[in-house]
Length: 170
Image (cartoon, rainbow, N blue to C red; front, side, top):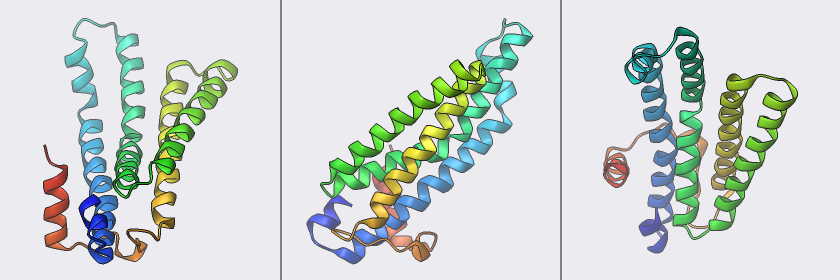
């Protein structure tokens, strides 16, 4: 994205950002689903001597957190896009929203409603969704450097997809 924005290649930057929305969402949803399927086995593997009650509570926390994986990945991807175009202000704002919502929801769910571990996990999922929506809204509203069209987000271009995957792969 940064290279395309730097070259002032609006079309290429726009397609790159559109793929940067869809690819992390799809891949994190798949990973999340696979981890959810294996969560019972994973928890027993990580805590072999744990009591059943503790294991059940840990599994509930883990499974709930996995629901927040796609929005967390989208949040990180959109903040990277914003920083790549030189707009760290909105990325910082989305991070502040994330933390403020987390603190508020932990207070509501845990302190006021007594939801304990489940409340903490739900607070994390909700704050990640709010942060993802905040940073996504900033990217969608952008008209400087790139112009994202929602109708093209899940329309893949092999060359752009290769470039996005090459840049995001370890």
